[in-house]
Length: 375
Ligand SMILES: CCCCCCCCCC/C=C/CC(=O)SCCNC(=O)CCNC(=O)[C@H](O)C(C)(C)COP(=O)(O)OP(=O)(O)OC[C@H]1O[C@@H](n2cnc3c(N)ncnc32)[C@H](O)[C@@H]1OP(=O)(O)O
Image 1: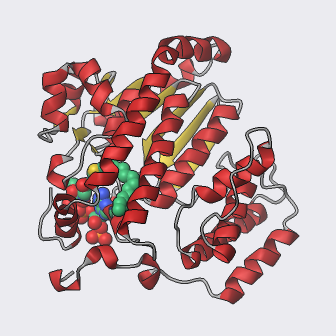
Image 2 (image 1 turned 45 degrees about the horizontal axis):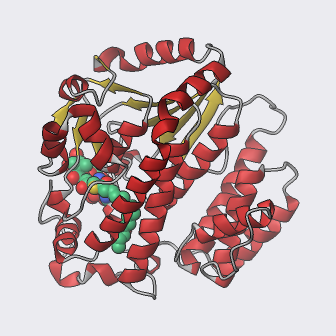
Image 3 (image 1 turned 90 degrees about the vertical axis):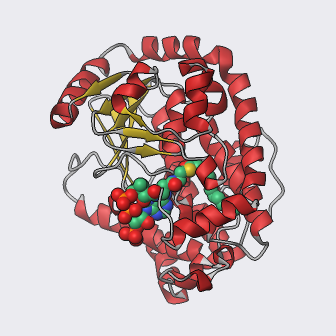
């Protein structure tokens, strides 16, 4: 990519993304009417939000009262799409309906065919043996988190909080756990401009991290490979972090002209002391898995060759423990700090909103996207 292609922040993703035609969209809407199996409330909300965004644009309804639960859930789902362009919403709607239809036809006549939950494009979510596993599934992009993926992770966590599993696991597909925020998120600028994008992104980030703060069951990170940015900072909100000895932990915020999120400005000093936290969060020091374990960020490190086998044997045993006892113990450990964590999350998100508009951040993102600099 040439530097002359910039300003990159003015690029519109819908200019480059494959577009769904109006005909594809209408036929997806009709297909939904023919669906025989109820796709579940989470999926219906997602489809509702994408449909409204595709047909009317960003949420234009007044916020319903707290007691109007159904309208509030619909409003939340639509508002969470922020300024997602209509064309992208159309495309996402068409893809979602198509994934629903194919999973419905592939499971016909096979009631227990698969534990994979339908409706996610960037994740593979499975639930079996008392464990809900949320796997980031963009291996060719090192599982970088797109706007859609933030939303799908929130939906998957909300569903996992309510399902009958005892524990929930987050992991990555491929050689990386996660390379953090997808830096292309900076290119998808709505007509309202970069300020509006930064404002909506700060809300998205706050809500995303909020789901981890509030998650009611034991939450385990299975860190299968290198972790970058927000995938590292969130680890302070997990109850257990198991890492392969191939994993590394890198938070290059200053290099990117950004600042910490995921409550790490509070949790990291608390976990590892302020000096070690500063080396990571201010100076971007990358830790090996063993270093991260010595600092208390990682619970246990396993050889990569036996990582999956050892970790899943352990987790299967944990998942058989009485779920209510585990949930109550987690809440005793975490609840004392919840309010504080939400306040820290809001503050970090609002500071980042300002950072995203800075020249330091713009230049760093341009460097990455133009491949003139790599971290
Ligand atoms: C206006 C504001 C809008 C902002 C909206 C944000 C909302 C919430 C923000 C929350 C904040 C989070 C902070 C962070 O997470 S900071 C960390 C961000 N991540 C990075 O800086 C990592 C960037 N990637 C790399 O440095 C390298 O790719 C790597 C991870 C070290 C791997 O290097 P390697 O050489 O092995 O592999 P490649 O570079 O060839 O990668 C393979 C392909 O994957 C693409 N890739 C990887 N990581 C990202 C990424 N984070 N964002 C976008 N794309 C990524 C890479 O480009 C390659 O793609 P290609 O094959 O198409 O070239």
